Image (cartoon, rainbow, N blue to C red; front, side, top):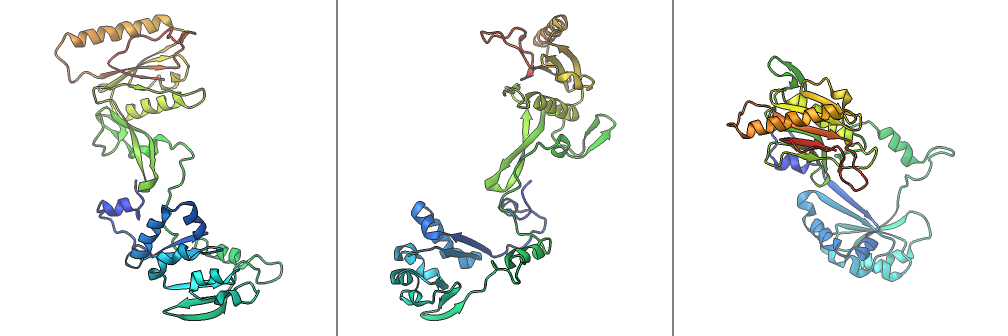
Length: 339
């Protein structure tokens, strides 16, 4: 799920054609203040300045006031410098090595450009912050509106935030009706292997998102979901069961559900669900526990049957007493998922 232009896509040797890398302009406003507050950034900026020409990376630094020590270490890498009117001659010398910027007129936009060994040019900057006509929007806003939706957008450093839960069908490959398995994801190598996706993991530093897998295939094939009221525990549990049902047939995974919160009624008709017992139905709960205990003992005493389905005891909304001990919680079966 890496972005097409991301470092991840390029480092993995992605075969699909990738857009050429544009020149990268790094703009730091308040540069002197940044270095004063975070001196550890100096090494990174120096590295960017030293390698920038080769890597097509350019620095544009600005500050209200520069000390000589703030930018002296960048001297060999600065192609040009621009100074507006400075408050003191020393401020001008820090940028130019000469006091010229203090003599600029008191006029917005008056500036000096220095390039080459010692060439300077006085000029007046253009402005985009004012209105071209009385009552009109500032030039910057007007130009921005005109540029919107024209041409391809720049590569976004961050993916949009995960502000909402994605539906399950976004995580799974397209569903199709398989003659042997029923409705299931198409072309899925991990199908029927006791693992299934249940969410997305954001990896900002890699500019990608990966699937979060529930994996019951190992020796610790159990899960517990913990959260406060209305935090989504039952929703996650139902998502997990639905995802498992889409990727496993009833011959591969069976669910026995103890529903103390009333949220599992909606999955009662799933083919993989063998039983759903309400928390108030002590008799059915006892029958489920007795059946699972019998199945466990039976499997212990026989040669393992690889064709037998994996059994999941699912408990949602378990109610404990004032001492923290569960009033209704039964012993565990071969696999459990509880909230």
